[in-house]
Image (cartoon, rainbow, N blue to C red; front, side, top):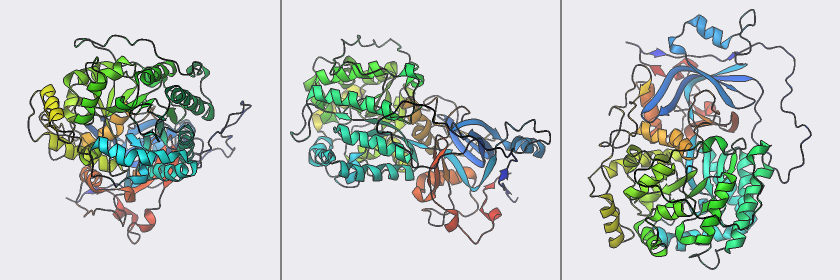
Length: 603
C-alpha cells in the first residue's frame, strides 16, 4: 500500500489593514548597561506552524503529531493552542486557519501558518551544565582525571578571563555554538571574574538565549593566581545579582529583593530531613524571575573550593533572592574522599550543601555519579535536581551515573554537555552519550551503594564504579502507538532496562526544564508555555545521515537523534523569537518537487 503524504501549503489570513502599534517603551526610568538583542524582533499577532510536531509530554510519553497545528502569540512568545489535525475534517481545519466570512473567528486564527513540509518542529534543548570559559579548550585535555584536570587545564584557562577582550571573544563563540546546536536554554558557569560574568550576561541577551548564569565562587584550595577573598567574592555575587536585575526587562516590583547585606553569612541551617520525611518540592519555579530570559545563579564551584563562611553566605543569598544554586556533587571518588576530610561532621557530600543552606528545591547538581542512597534520598526530599553529564563522566574517567535508578527513586534529572569536561557543545551528543551510559550501567548488578562508593574511593580516583541495573519504558522497536504516543506512563521507567532514545530526549527537554525550575514555561509544546523550539530538516543535502523514503516519522526522528547535528537545524526560536536561521532549503534537494520532500506517513 502506498504511504500517505502530508502536503501543507502556507496560509495567510486577511486582516484589517490598520497598522499594529508593537511594543511601547513608555516613560521608564533609565537603566544601566542594558543589553539590546540583535535577534529579529517578532511581529505582533498570532502565527502558526503546521506539519510534524514532536515533543515529550512526560517520561515515556513521546508525542508525535503527524499533521499538527501549533499557534503562538508573537507578542508574548507563548503557545496558545496545539491541535492534532489528523482527526478533523477539511471544514474543521479550515475553521482553524482561515477567517470565516462573518469574521467571528478572526481573533483565534493565525495571521500566517508556515508549512513545515519535509521538516519537523521539536522543543529547544536545555543544557543544564556548561562552563562558558572552558569552551576555549573544549576537545583537548582529555588525558587526566578530574582533580588533576582542574589544576592542569581548567584553572589556567579560566584565569585568562580577567581580560575582557579575551572573554568577549570566547563567550561570543561559545553562546553562538550552543544556539547553533539547538540549545535554547543553558545553565552557564562563568569564571570568578565579576566583569567578565557581566559580559557573558550581555552576550547571552544579545544572542537571545535563555540562560541561568553565575559567577563562580572559590575562596580555598585554589591556585594563588585564581582565587578570591571571601568578603569580596560575596560582594561580587551580590553585584552580579543587581546587574542582572537592573539591566534586564522591567520586572514586577514585588519579585525583586534589593541586595542590602554585603558579605552576610546565613543563619544556622535547618536540621536535615530524616529518612522518612517528605519535603515537598515548592513553587519556586513560579517565583523565580524568568520574564527576563537571564536568571542570576548562585555557584559555589564545589565544596573543596569554598569555605564554610562562603557557603553560608551563598546559601543566604539564594534564600534572600529566591535564586537557583548550581554546583557539582559526587563526581569522582577522589573528590568525595576530599570532602569527607574537609567536613567530617557532615553525613555526606550532599549533606555539606544542605547544612550550608545550598540544597533545596531550586538547587541542581552536576554529575552525582557516586551518590549514596542517603544522598539520593536527600535530593529527592529537598527537590534538588541532577544534571547528568555522560560525556564528561566518560572522558574524565569519573564513572557511570545510574540515571534510571535516580528516576525510579524520584529524583529530577536533566542533561548537560559539561564543556570542556565533555568533548562537545551539542546536546544531541549528550542524548547519545546518555543512552550509551545507561546501557553501560546496565551491564551488571552492583552491590550495596555505600559499599560500591567506599570500595571505589579506597581503590583510586579514576576507577569506574559498578552501577545497578537500569531500564526503559518504550517498546524496543521504538514504534509509536496509534494515538501518537511512544512508551507508557510508568514514572521512572522499568528499573531493569536501560534508557532509550525517547527517554534521553525527554531528559534533554522536559527533564532539563524541571531541573532548572522552568517546567511551567518551557520543555514541551503544552499551551501556555513559551515557544522555545527548533525546526529540523532531516533531508538537508549535507546531513550526516541518509533517508531512503521507507522510514516512518518515528524512525526519521530516531535516526536524527542518533546521527543528526547542527547541519539539520534550520531555525531556533526562544520565547517565540527567531534567534538563529540557516537556509537548508537552498541546499536541500533543490531539484525535487515539494511533494517529494514530505514525510511518508503509514496509513
